[in-house]
Length: 440
Image 1 (cartoon, rainbow, N blue to C red):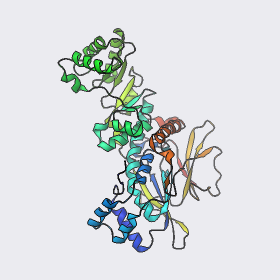
Image 2: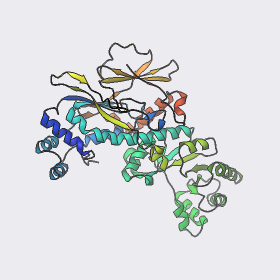
Image 3: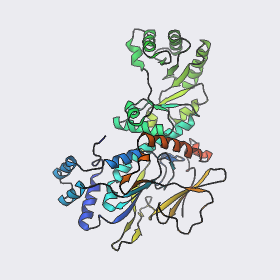
Image 4: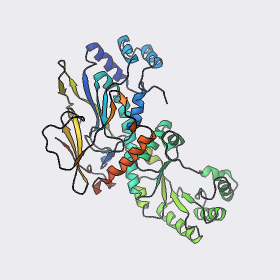
């Protein structure tokens, strides 16, 4: 995709650049941070997702003739600002929590070091991507652990926007889902895709048997037959009669699932289809997945709940200026002090501390020289690690964070980082973050 992302932003980002250019402050060195003041939905941890997509979007953040003509026609900025935008290419540095990492209140997920004008232009783009993708990944992570090792497939394309569906599939896969129904996500990110037939396919045919025969003829006996269009018990019997005891799986999309699943498992076994798997769909979320995890269900298909963040569609992240150079070129810290919306000024680095068993105990946000420097005068815990990693250096995007390889690395990172959290992190109840955030 080579389409410009420059207008995926808010009007006031450009008017701020225009005013700063006229005031002579646009080129002041600045540090912006993207963070969440709290974990939306009282979650115990958040999952960073969307970083690779953001880096791809920054690469394409260019004002071509088409974007400039729109701005000129609607008189959004001055001629001088248009000239500046025509030459825009982000040339600063970006540090951040690597994708798949877990985060907590105050965690500086993205740190942008650039001129004020370059940094402020990325605000809306960064927030729109990370807020949505991280919400999906956080919900998907909770579902993945609730499933107790049983595979989940993302099937929510029809419950969100067409492009949001691709991003949601990516975030769900990052956080532990094994497949998606979305073909574009499969093409773009290398995610395994899956799917067989819906109720309409059964209804198309003169009988359920004919529908099953057609599907098995086309897809083989290892296919998954949807058995609840009419009567589930008869559907299971017909499925085994048509496909034989080597039938791959049956899917159940309705009913009192714990009861129905147990009945279907007994019936399959009685019919000799002991290796036929059971997959369930039907408006699942982390709570219903947890309730079914110990049942004879073999896999889950989750749609609406995962793509809307299971009721928490945004992580409430913000993007704030925390430091800038003054007229003399000296760095000064700045912070918003509004009630309930205060921020912590200054350049920062981050370390996560661990106990002797390797369990995370605290998120340490260190005020000092920033992610590339050392904290000043602090005695840190004996076991800790740096969290922030470079994402962009002098305008050049580090390729290990993007593409299918970047997604694969993020998926593995997520698995590792969640395993380091204390057991309370996996609770599905609302509560405090799994580990505290400490400023030093």
